[in-house]
Length: 266
Image (tube, rainbow, N blue to C red):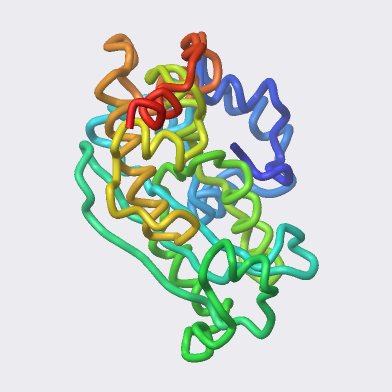
């Protein structure tokens, strides 16, 4: 996923992940100097490399085992960026299926309605000593760097964080992203693909507290590792993995809910 303000058209973006984009085509779609633009994009989490006169996403040539993935989850006090905000954010960096770093923070917030508290367990009082949103966003952006952004149903987390960054004066995200839900649909057979269901069915994270950021991150991490273990061995690079998670044929869903059958047996 790239921010909609990314200046290249869809065809050019596709070529960056595939056959490559020549310098002339790249320059014609930019408002600024090419070198300056590439530097700016890198600061926003996107690295392009040049090979034999063509530009590519750096992730095109990056083996999955050598890449850093940042698994992210946020809790918010609503879904509308205009009037709502992040109230908790967590992330782990993963390399070769191992956690190499962690980030976690509540966010100072003046209003959390009862419905959100019922779902997350987070109250306004819990956030009173937490850092303000600007500080948390700045630290998270530094933590994320140019890693691959991973989340379960990634569009919401990616977009909300990116829009939050813009709202408070930072640059939007341009990191390459991967949806763990889409990947699971193509590597693991299940009756449903919601995170809580997959957690229970595959017994990923027995101590999970659903709708708390770090707990959901840890569940997603274990799901991600399990998906990689079942990945088509022909998929070697990060860009191949991203493409696979979007375009490969989904596995047939189970016709009967095994968890319901399990409850009946008990």
